[in-house]
Amino acid sequence: METLFKRHDIYLANTPMTIVRDIMHEINWNSRLVAIVGARGVGKSTLIRQFIRINFGQYDRSVLYCSLDSVYFSTHSFIDLAEQFVMNGGKRLFLDEVHKYNGWSKEIKEIYDLYPELKIVISGSSLLEILNADADLSRRCIRYTLHGLSFREFLRFYKGISIRKYGLDEILGDPSGLCSDVVAQCRPVQYFKEYLAFGYYPFYLEGKEEYYTRIEQVVNFIIEVELPQLRKVDVSNIRKLKALVSIIASDVPYEVDASKLSRMIGAGRDTVIEYMRHLADAAVFNLLYSDVRSVGKLTRPDKIYLENPNLLYALSTSDILIGTARETFVVSQLAPEHIVEYGRQHGDFKVDGKYTFEVGGKDKTFSQIAGVGNSFVLSDDIESSLGRKLPIWIVGFLK
Image (cartoon, rainbow, N blue to C red; front, top):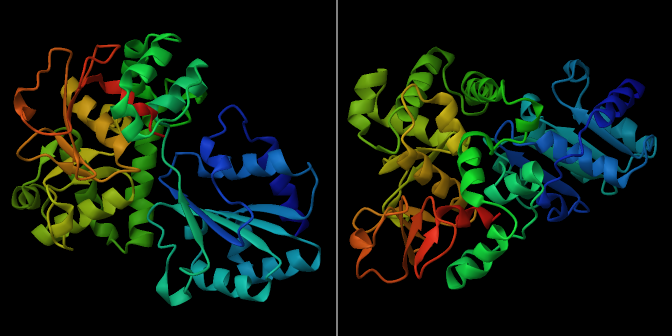
């Protein structure tokens, strides 16, 4: 136990406090069991350690943070740890990267039942099956998802420009107020272009030179470790998964031809669709359908985007088309909180079943959405709204 506390002290001492996400104040940390999930690299571990630093004394032994990649857990169980911790006055247990521990869900359930006075926070991959029926965690666990930085957060943390979050209805109802607030503090078009290339992951401050290398490492870890471990993907198919990502990264937005992809990577059509869903769950892809109500297990998506524009810049083997980067941005900002569908007949996207968006440059017109109610053009290279023509970066203030 003392070994774990020593590591706990080291982890906290090395935790940066430069970027403290808003979700810190949205999580109900007093719940008995909290799960924080998200793609690798978005800052889950940092968020947890920041909470401990802010709320507990340096050597407070009523709280313990453990990372499950520690060799300690090769010879010790969660249950052993919880028993010793509670016996010595422990009140709060933070278990990071629980997906690296085999059988974690059943032991967490047992700890929950044995020690009602203990508050537990777990974190893990976005692939993690938190609501696991056999462990019956669905009634016990409150789940939160951490995404990468929005454009609003990028401005706050990297540029020192603080602007509040806006709801989508609020933005579309009165975009001029937000535009005026932003333009009064910065030139958003300049920063928007920087965000597309470098703004999504919170490790940007650690060095621009290695930023794309770290993104590649994140994706490789997902494919090589997390998918085989958490989705039982055969390791012999790792090359096919990487080929799928490479094809999509170099040809997005990709209008899906599952049979063609099947031939290109040497896997069956149903397997390709399954892989696409796994990669979407892992926050590598965003899959769009023209009608989400009719989506079944083997329904192919109508269009695929990389999950965020930084992935596009890091992984594409061809020149980046700005139109692709713009659309990828819009989907990445809207998808976490809204239902985004492929606008097959009118516009690029339909959102929440009521709004239609067309995305383009400053000269983009309404010709493709003429006569469509609640329709808007999101244009690059403009600072202010003009009727239903809005700056594209405005949707970056939703989270």
